Length: 292
Image (cartoon, rainbow, N blue to C red; front, top):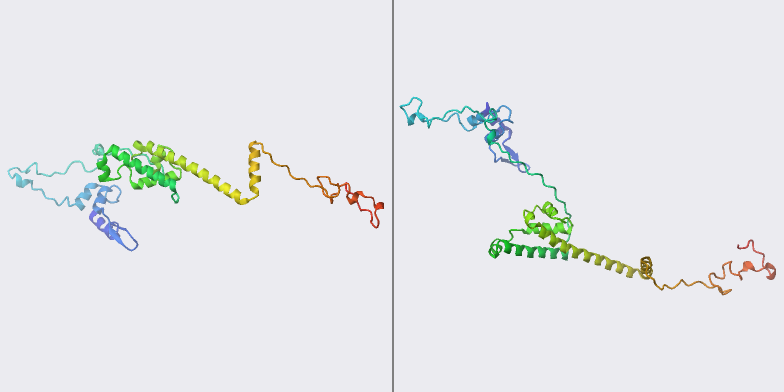
């Protein structure tokens, strides 16, 4: 029954899997081993001894215990292979309880950040050089010059170094726990604090340079704006409370009466036409209304 089931499994292709479209390749795991491991899962099996008897010809094995000791009717007790009283862990699980694995599963690691692509600047390269110098010094201190010369990067590989630089560029590493989560570096517990200190030192320099660059760009934009520059900086200084001798706005002067604050066309001017009586003028009709 089981042998025919295994043959049918091969016919259906259960012992194969797709590697590429249109191509088939045999599994590394033999179907007999699969049935032995998963005997409780396959319908019609339910016993590991059945798999031994069918797939590994356990029933066909002949014992030669009579050839060793022909004087005894039962043969040689050492060579006589008898069937054990215990069947398998499926039928007698209590017998095999001492062989079970009780190792706890490690906790699932926190997912790391997905970093977008970027172009390295000079501060990224300086951080990379600092990490390389630290790695060489640490290799010499821990393992000696011979190990550094023969084996190269042992404490921190080049791939791990680039990963740290990328995470530092996006400000993902602020603590030792961040370093361990983002990089999965196996030496984070021993050297994590030193790496974080190096990152923070270069991050401070990079932030200062970035602020200076933004300030320089703002000044360039103001210079390109022309006359608005003086007005902009005047507003800044006045808002900060600094006293400046800013000249007052030049007031207009009337050309008719000579007073400031209006012009000759304004009706507030005493010499405006609206203030002159119609009787004093010839061929001039009185105005329809007077300005208030």
